[in-house]
Image 1 (cartoon, rainbow, N blue to C red):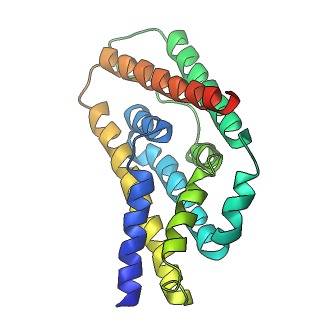
Image 2: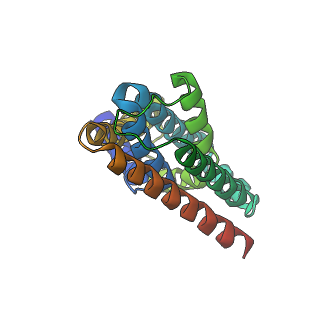
Image 3: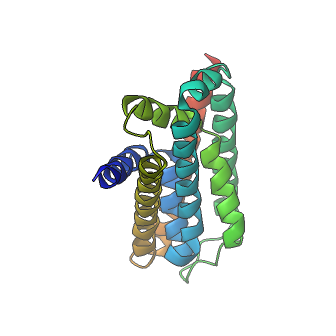
Length: 208
């Protein structure tokens, strides 16, 4: 029963970090719109893998990891904000370079492995996720004392996170087949502007 309870707690923790639609969520939605579910799935899995690894690190080293990350100061936010602005700029440049057509959009470049690595890095550059899981595991001190319960918590996080990220990509994939090319271009424009705005906000907050 303790194992099932920890699995459920892990799933709730995973949904808690995955469901808020931030920059990564916007990018995943764009993956679904531009690449479809099958080709967009590697990006979703990458985000879930990072959440899983961070939750495992929190279970193992949470008490010491949070202060260490705090000692990094604003550098993670500066790096993350810069990366987001760079990705948004590249996306806008590609959109402007591709002429509008009434036919189907060309298949975007990049293999599944490349997209996996890209989203793995994008998600990992935000160590606030580790701090989030560290705070939760501190509250579960005494209940994660065995390997089985700790593993159940981490597995719950991973399953919930990957499932939710796939839902986001799947939503984009559904829209991919239901919107016109003009609407698709507008969605790409809006998504990149949102990502750029979030990146700028991170930079301003870090450098203030």
